[in-house]
Length: 141
Image (cartoon, rainbow, N blue to C red; front, side, top):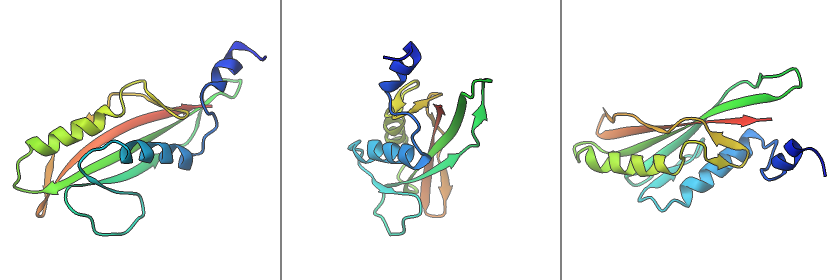
């Protein structure tokens, strides 16, 4: 039967690779029904506006106890791209809906959202308007 801790960990898939965690995030985004196209990491192609560029940043594992429990942290950055000059209200609304998919404390596989996702102020990039959404997560192993 195992210890309480072992029983509790069985409920969540543990020891997921970074790629598996990223896949869970991408499935959540793709299944969200948001009115955007998705641009996945290292995938080429022209997309219709609006679209969201998705990227991940991984951190080095950090050992927390002598027993070897460690934490890996990461960031999922979603950059909503719309046409500049169309106003900031609609992009902000889409970005806030995107952020709401990843509420503080929610689990995605073995990843847990560690802070409320942050919708940053949009900015002009040539003839485009970009609105970043930052999602911080960590994995305990």
